[in-house]
Length: 117
Image 1: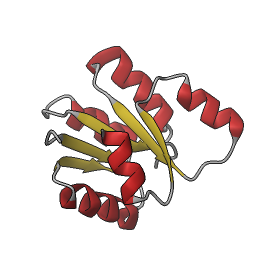
Image 2 (image 1 turned 60 degrees about the vertical axis):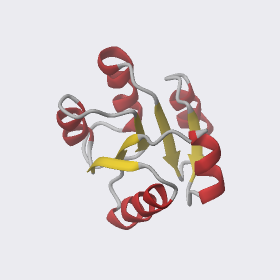
Image 3 (image 1 turned 135 degrees about the vertical axis):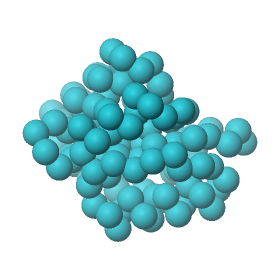
C-alpha cells in the first residue's frame, strides 16, 4: 500500500483523533487537521496533500460539500466523505461532488482500508 499524506477535516476533536490514530496505524501520514472549511482551504493551499477526508457537517457557514466543490475547482485532489448524516438529499448532494468514497460514522478500520485501496 502506498503511504499517503492525508488531511482530515472534522469538527469533533475526538473523532479527528480516532481517525488520525487509525490512519497512522495503517501506515499513512497526517499532514493536517482542520475543524472548518476556512481553515481547510487555507491549509490545503500550502500543504502537499494526497487525499482529504472530510466530514459533511462542519463548524461555520460552509460544510464539507462546499469544501468538495472547492477541491474540485481549485486543487483537483481526491477526497473521501465520512459522516453520520442519513438525509438522502444531503447524501445525494455529497455524491454529486465525486468523492472517492463515503464512509458512515463511526468509521471502521476495514471500511477505511477499503476506501483507501
